[in-house]
Image (cartoon, rainbow, N blue to C red; front, side, top):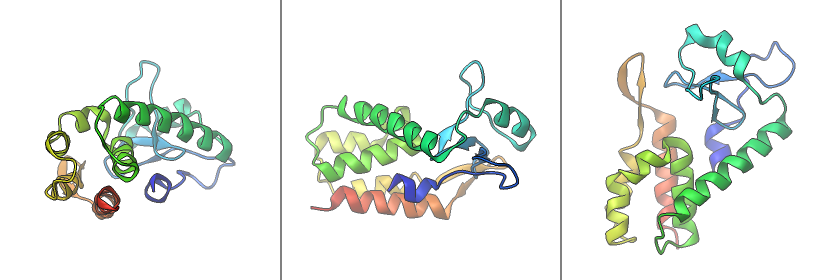
Length: 161
């Protein structure tokens, strides 16, 4: 599911190898949606930082992108496992995808998680997924169609038996 929604990022097809691209929220990403970070570990954002994003990008081949995705997934899986909730495989997978996209800090402080801690099968959890379909685009909080589709897919997976 993550691959379907992230797609393999290649920002400039004029160059050999994969190039970072800027997501709708203005963050530079590479591979399967991995953030490009500067020398201090800060996220790189904005079109004005394209050259910097290209300089700090590490993923140049599809095999490097696959390896990075596996590393990122193990990290997100460990984060979700640390919640020590009695989730089934589908709930776990949906929360890993959610965490991959919005970050573990956002999951930890979300109403979605608060409701799951009380009742993993609470039907109102579906609406909590849907609340995370916005990003700041040019400084304005905007509903993004891709995020809406992703949240719908995650909540559907979460409730699949």
